[in-house]
Length: 140
Image (tube, rainbow, N blue to C red; front, side):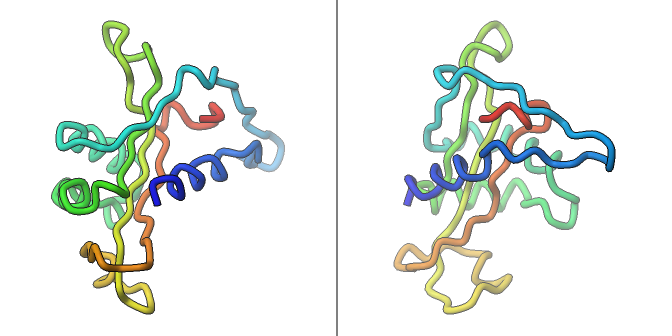
């Protein structure tokens, strides 16, 4: 299922420019693939994920820090973070994206079925696939 999340990230980042207004297209800027890597989200990553989440969704749609911490602690197999090598403070790695989900046993998706993680579930609910605002349109 981790491979499914990574595949989803790849599919979402195909070269499909969006129209920012009727006269202008925002071009992609290519990033070297060797600069990007993914790993499981840790508890230490959650505050940064929460900041990116709150900057990427309207307040009524953004997951709370507590919800993100719950997903990391209980559904960590379905929570990955993406980093760009060497672009952070002091030349460290910079978190630029993440994807998270939970499993459900429900037949249909509801607010309740997406509010918890059921390890025995067979349906993956993808909650967020986000690229930090300053790194969008870089073909991550």
